[in-house]
Amino acid sequence: VRLLPATPPPGPARPEFWRSPLRGARLTVVLGLVLLAAIVVVAVTGFLSHAAYQPDLGRNAQVPVGQDLQLFVIGWPTSPSWLYALTQGLHVTIGIVAVPVLLAKLWSVIPRLFAWPPVASAAQALERLSALALVGSTLFQFATGITNAELYYPWHFKFVSAHYYGAWVMVAAVALHLGLKYPTIRTALRTRQEVLQLADDLRAPAPAPETISRRGFFATVAGASGLLLVTTAGQSLGGPFRRIALFAPRGAGVSGPAGFPVNKTAAVARITPQLVGAGWRLRLTGPDGTTAELSRTELMNMPQQTYNLPIACVEGWSTTQSWRGVRLTDLAARVGAHDAQQVRVESLQPRGAFRQTTLGHAQLRDHRALLALQVNGMDLPLDHGYPARIIVPALPGVHCTKWVGELSFS
Amino acid sequence: VRRLYGASPLHLLGHLALLGVAAYALSRAFQPRFAPEPLNLAAWLVGGALLHDLVLLPAYSALDALAVRTLHTPLLNHVRIPFVLSACVFLVYAPRILDRQPRNVVNALGVEPPDYLLRWALLTAALFMGSLLLYAMRAHAGARARAAARGGPHGS
Image 1 (tube, rainbow over the protein chains, first blue to last red):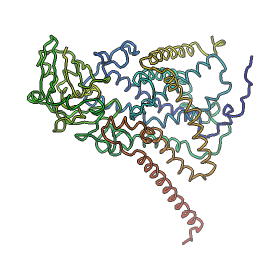
Image 2 (image 1 turned 120 degrees about the horizontal axis):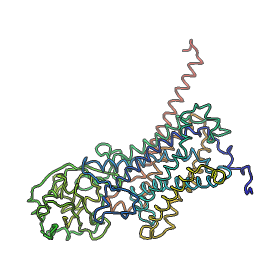
Image 3 (image 1 turned 30 degrees about the vertical axis):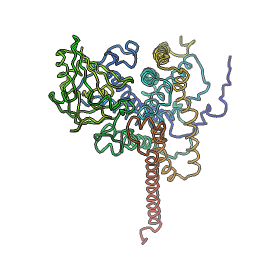
Image 4 (image 1 turned 180 degrees about the vertical axis):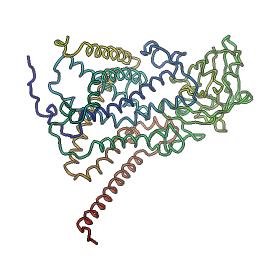
């Protein structure tokens, strides 16, 4: 039984409705391959960020372990120290830079949305559903990721879980899409333009006069991506590039105490001057229950180390500063934890997902892993974690706990 | 299978695999502790596709059609290209350009953020001015070349 007429109603369902002379299989394939490269980078660095949070340790997991669809745990190293700055800088920057390519790709295939008849078979119905999953999840990932990096949270769900599970839908949908389109991609790249045109359903049957060449179109997309790159990447690269990062939230014109930006102020973390005053003591606990309490003066009298290390935020920005403080292994020795495997770090801040964190063996044992007391030759400013904060190479910024109150070695 | 379904068994298998992954991932994301308002998450998951396909794309296509009708060709792209560049920056950085939820920024950074709207306005002005200046220079060079061609080899 035919429910719909064989000829489409006037409007976008008719092929003649789409008149741009630019559309065609090859344009879509080129845009698709560029977008694919970007999505691979964004997805891989996204899952690496999940690994960098070391969800298997303590209460680190943001998404429940065993429900995160990962078959194995990736151990997170401490070298090179700029590893997380690189992976997360790529995640955020490439995501932003890919937006014009994503828009161009979607523009190039829009006639397909209105193809007539809307559903011709069970197989086509499933393809439509998978296209919704593909476009819906991709736009969801870009929209939530970019707005989150801009400190704008217009939704009523937990960002981390939604962005994490959304990524699995996107990755699965992209993989299926590639499988489905593999023959088309091959044909579009290997067939001569004149032959390709004969079976190209994306080509306008009645094209309008050309107003921009295909090369001009690609150059415009590249120009838009390049402009986003230039106005964004500086918040990750630092140096002179930060001055031209005009729109990145930790870019041009944004700094903080000791000459670098803050991720979260003491005020918003509810750190009061009383909490960090002269009465502050660092509490250490060893695996056998040995405890010790150290004042800031006592900590300053321990051997001090200085390292230039980056802190890198999940929002994509990073900055390298000169940190000075006590080695975590020296503090472990104070409570007899000479072969401790882990350390649980607790902040003075009364609430928040990152008021406590657990560092693994590689992090604890790295000789550059510090309880920092000073930065750039001065005492830590309160907003950067006074009286003491964790600095570990290649560790996500939120795990470099500020306003540390207690270290428990085990 | 092909007659009933309309494609190869592999096609069916691939789609069932996607449905499986998506169903599991969404069932986790929709847990009440992550998504206390399930309709809000659902709206976000499909809303982007609907807004893009049925609002954003038709809107910029209509705007482009209007530009094509009103501007002649060399000038058209000198307006189109700075517009696209400026619009892409606006789309990506709209929350900061429009200064949405400004408390979040002040709370996090500890300082007032820069005036991103001013920066975007200046960038847009610079893009359009640069592009139109280029157009004027090209038009001028073209006019001179035409004048020289008309004058021929004996022209002054």
